[in-house]
Length: 96
Figure (cartoon, helix red, strand yellow):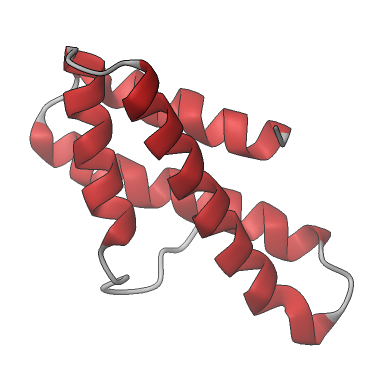
């Protein structure tokens, strides 16, 4: 798996012991940082948005895989919250 996706996963897993508001704020920040890394790595200016969409899809798939792996645990419950945040449309662009 891509190291950028693994870094995203580690970041959102670290939010597991935080309160709801901190998770709601932290997941979009981790996702935006990962998307920025994908955009920056793309050399074709026309493909930068596609790279960010690919990043979101890969992050989502990685979280789904971890939910399956940790079924019936508190980690799975936390990751379901993370997944719901990933699936929400962005409300405003994050500044990183």
